[in-house]
Length: 208
Image (tube, rainbow, N blue to C red; front, side, top):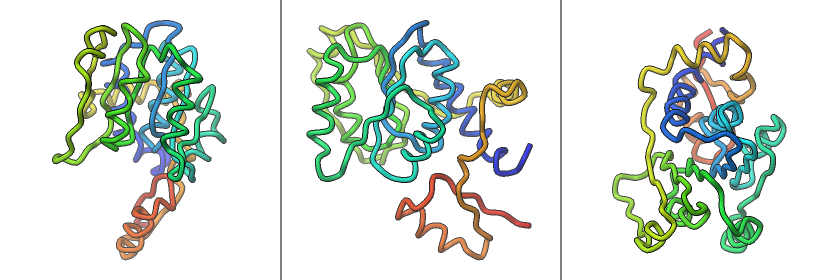
Protein backbone atom coordinates (compact mmCIF):
# COMPACT_ATOMS: atom_id res chain seq x y z
CA UNK A 1 0.00 0.00 0.00
CA UNK A 2 1.38 3.44 -0.89
CA UNK A 3 2.45 5.40 2.19
CA UNK A 4 0.12 8.32 1.37
CA UNK A 5 -2.82 5.90 1.46
CA UNK A 6 -1.58 3.96 4.49
CA UNK A 7 -1.77 7.11 6.63
CA UNK A 8 -5.54 6.98 6.18
CA UNK A 9 -6.02 3.47 7.53
CA UNK A 10 -6.36 4.68 11.14
CA UNK A 11 -9.00 7.38 10.39
CA UNK A 12 -10.79 4.86 8.16
CA UNK A 13 -10.85 2.46 11.11
CA UNK A 14 -12.43 5.21 13.22
CA UNK A 15 -14.99 5.78 10.49
CA UNK A 16 -15.72 2.04 10.30
CA UNK A 17 -16.43 1.99 14.02
CA UNK A 18 -18.72 4.97 13.52
CA UNK A 19 -20.67 3.10 10.86
CA UNK A 20 -21.05 0.15 13.19
CA UNK A 21 -22.28 2.46 15.95
CA UNK A 22 -24.90 4.24 13.81
CA UNK A 23 -25.96 1.06 11.97
CA UNK A 24 -27.68 2.65 8.94
CA UNK A 25 -30.79 0.84 7.77
CA UNK A 26 -31.13 -0.09 4.12
CA UNK A 27 -32.39 2.90 2.17
CA UNK A 28 -31.36 5.50 4.76
CA UNK A 29 -31.12 9.20 4.03
CA UNK A 30 -28.06 10.76 5.63
CA UNK A 31 -26.82 14.31 6.16
CA UNK A 32 -23.10 14.65 6.80
CA UNK A 33 -21.86 17.96 8.17
CA UNK A 34 -18.21 18.30 7.21
CA UNK A 35 -16.07 16.67 4.55
CA UNK A 36 -12.56 16.64 5.88
CA UNK A 37 -10.45 13.50 5.40
CA UNK A 38 -12.47 11.50 7.92
CA UNK A 39 -15.71 12.85 6.48
CA UNK A 40 -14.66 11.63 3.04
CA UNK A 41 -14.01 8.18 4.45
CA UNK A 42 -17.33 8.24 6.29
CA UNK A 43 -19.09 9.20 3.07
CA UNK A 44 -17.69 6.20 1.22
CA UNK A 45 -18.53 3.81 4.03
CA UNK A 46 -22.04 5.21 4.43
CA UNK A 47 -22.74 4.55 0.75
CA UNK A 48 -21.44 0.99 1.20
CA UNK A 49 -23.65 0.37 4.22
CA UNK A 50 -27.30 1.10 3.62
CA UNK A 51 -27.33 4.77 2.67
CA UNK A 52 -29.52 5.41 -0.36
CA UNK A 53 -29.16 9.20 -0.39
CA UNK A 54 -26.23 11.11 1.09
CA UNK A 55 -26.03 14.89 1.41
CA UNK A 56 -22.77 16.59 2.38
CA UNK A 57 -22.94 20.10 3.86
CA UNK A 58 -19.68 21.96 4.29
CA UNK A 59 -17.89 25.26 4.01
CA UNK A 60 -16.51 26.12 0.59
CA UNK A 61 -12.88 25.28 -0.02
CA UNK A 62 -10.52 22.52 -1.13
CA UNK A 63 -12.20 19.84 0.99
CA UNK A 64 -15.64 20.36 -0.52
CA UNK A 65 -14.11 20.72 -3.97
CA UNK A 66 -12.37 17.36 -3.61
CA UNK A 67 -15.51 15.69 -2.25
CA UNK A 68 -17.40 16.90 -5.32
CA UNK A 69 -14.69 15.75 -7.71
CA UNK A 70 -14.68 12.30 -6.11
CA UNK A 71 -18.49 12.18 -6.33
CA UNK A 72 -18.75 11.18 -2.67
CA UNK A 73 -22.39 12.21 -2.18
CA UNK A 74 -25.67 12.47 -4.02
CA UNK A 75 -25.90 16.19 -3.29
CA UNK A 76 -23.68 18.91 -1.85
CA UNK A 77 -24.62 22.02 0.11
CA UNK A 78 -22.21 24.91 0.57
CA UNK A 79 -22.43 26.68 3.93
CA UNK A 80 -20.87 30.10 3.49
CA UNK A 81 -19.28 32.13 6.26
CA UNK A 82 -21.19 35.24 5.23
CA UNK A 83 -24.65 33.66 4.98
CA UNK A 84 -24.37 30.57 7.16
CA UNK A 85 -27.81 31.02 8.76
CA UNK A 86 -29.53 31.49 5.40
CA UNK A 87 -27.75 28.45 3.96
CA UNK A 88 -28.67 26.31 6.98
CA UNK A 89 -32.28 27.51 6.82
CA UNK A 90 -32.43 26.66 3.11
CA UNK A 91 -31.16 23.17 3.85
CA UNK A 92 -33.95 22.64 6.40
CA UNK A 93 -36.56 23.95 3.99
CA UNK A 94 -35.33 21.61 1.27
CA UNK A 95 -35.70 18.64 3.65
CA UNK A 96 -38.68 19.54 5.86
CA UNK A 97 -39.01 16.03 7.31
CA UNK A 98 -35.30 15.74 8.08
CA UNK A 99 -32.87 12.87 7.56
CA UNK A 100 -32.76 9.37 9.02
CA UNK A 101 -29.20 10.00 10.21
CA UNK A 102 -27.34 13.25 10.74
CA UNK A 103 -23.58 13.03 11.32
CA UNK A 104 -21.81 16.07 12.77
CA UNK A 105 -18.18 15.74 11.72
CA UNK A 106 -16.98 19.36 11.68
CA UNK A 107 -16.01 19.63 15.33
CA UNK A 108 -17.82 22.97 15.56
CA UNK A 109 -20.06 23.12 18.62
CA UNK A 110 -22.34 25.63 16.91
CA UNK A 111 -23.02 23.18 14.08
CA UNK A 112 -23.60 20.34 16.54
CA UNK A 113 -26.15 22.45 18.40
CA UNK A 114 -28.12 23.00 15.18
CA UNK A 115 -27.72 19.44 13.89
CA UNK A 116 -30.55 18.12 16.03
CA UNK A 117 -33.09 20.09 13.97
CA UNK A 118 -32.19 18.17 10.80
CA UNK A 119 -32.99 14.71 12.20
CA UNK A 120 -36.36 13.23 11.27
CA UNK A 121 -38.72 11.67 13.79
CA UNK A 122 -37.24 8.44 15.07
CA UNK A 123 -33.88 9.34 13.57
CA UNK A 124 -30.32 9.34 14.85
CA UNK A 125 -27.84 12.13 15.52
CA UNK A 126 -24.20 11.06 15.54
CA UNK A 127 -21.69 13.18 17.45
CA UNK A 128 -18.52 12.45 15.50
CA UNK A 129 -16.43 15.63 15.44
CA UNK A 130 -13.62 16.49 17.84
CA UNK A 131 -14.63 19.43 20.04
CA UNK A 132 -12.89 21.75 22.46
CA UNK A 133 -13.21 20.33 25.95
CA UNK A 134 -14.68 23.62 27.14
CA UNK A 135 -17.42 23.62 24.48
CA UNK A 136 -21.02 23.57 25.71
CA UNK A 137 -24.28 23.33 23.75
CA UNK A 138 -28.01 23.45 24.53
CA UNK A 139 -30.64 21.14 23.06
CA UNK A 140 -34.40 21.38 23.72
CA UNK A 141 -35.43 18.23 25.64
CA UNK A 142 -38.91 18.45 24.12
CA UNK A 143 -37.44 18.02 20.64
CA UNK A 144 -35.53 14.92 21.71
CA UNK A 145 -38.58 13.48 23.45
CA UNK A 146 -41.30 14.22 20.90
CA UNK A 147 -39.12 13.16 17.97
CA UNK A 148 -37.88 10.07 19.84
CA UNK A 149 -34.35 10.85 18.76
CA UNK A 150 -31.33 8.66 19.32
CA UNK A 151 -28.14 10.58 20.07
CA UNK A 152 -24.89 8.65 20.01
CA UNK A 153 -21.19 9.24 19.68
CA UNK A 154 -18.31 7.44 18.06
CA UNK A 155 -14.72 7.61 19.24
CA UNK A 156 -11.53 5.84 18.19
CA UNK A 157 -10.91 2.88 15.90
CA UNK A 158 -11.84 0.01 18.27
CA UNK A 159 -9.96 -2.78 16.47
CA UNK A 160 -11.35 -1.96 13.02
CA UNK A 161 -8.04 -2.07 11.15
CA UNK A 162 -8.76 -5.54 9.66
CA UNK A 163 -12.15 -4.27 8.47
CA UNK A 164 -10.52 -1.37 6.65
CA UNK A 165 -7.92 -3.60 5.04
CA UNK A 166 -10.67 -5.86 3.69
CA UNK A 167 -12.48 -2.87 2.20
CA UNK A 168 -9.21 -1.74 0.63
CA UNK A 169 -8.23 -5.22 -0.57
CA UNK A 170 -11.57 -5.59 -2.38
CA UNK A 171 -11.23 -2.05 -3.81
CA UNK A 172 -14.44 -0.84 -2.21
CA UNK A 173 -12.77 1.88 -0.13
CA UNK A 174 -10.55 4.31 -2.01
CA UNK A 175 -7.85 5.98 0.08
CA UNK A 176 -6.10 7.63 -2.85
CA UNK A 177 -6.17 11.36 -3.54
CA UNK A 178 -7.15 12.48 -0.03
CA UNK A 179 -3.62 13.44 0.99
CA UNK A 180 -3.12 16.54 -1.16
CA UNK A 181 0.12 17.95 0.24
CA UNK A 182 3.39 16.58 1.60
CA UNK A 183 6.08 18.24 3.71
CA UNK A 184 9.53 17.36 4.94
CA UNK A 185 9.98 17.19 8.71
CA UNK A 186 11.99 20.42 8.63
CA UNK A 187 8.92 22.13 7.06
CA UNK A 188 6.81 21.37 10.12
CA UNK A 189 6.11 25.03 10.94
CA UNK A 190 5.08 25.69 7.33
CA UNK A 191 2.76 22.67 7.48
CA UNK A 192 1.07 23.92 10.66
CA UNK A 193 0.59 27.37 9.13
CA UNK A 194 -1.02 25.89 6.01
CA UNK A 195 -3.22 23.69 8.22
CA UNK A 196 -4.42 26.73 10.14
CA UNK A 197 -5.27 28.44 6.84
CA UNK A 198 -7.00 25.30 5.52
CA UNK A 199 -4.87 25.27 2.40
CA UNK A 200 -4.97 21.50 1.93
CA UNK A 201 -7.31 18.57 2.55
CA UNK A 202 -4.81 16.39 4.38
CA UNK A 203 -1.06 16.66 4.60
CA UNK A 204 1.60 14.08 5.40
CA UNK A 205 5.17 14.34 6.60
CA UNK A 206 7.49 12.39 4.31
CA UNK A 207 11.03 11.22 5.01
CA UNK A 208 12.32 10.23 1.58
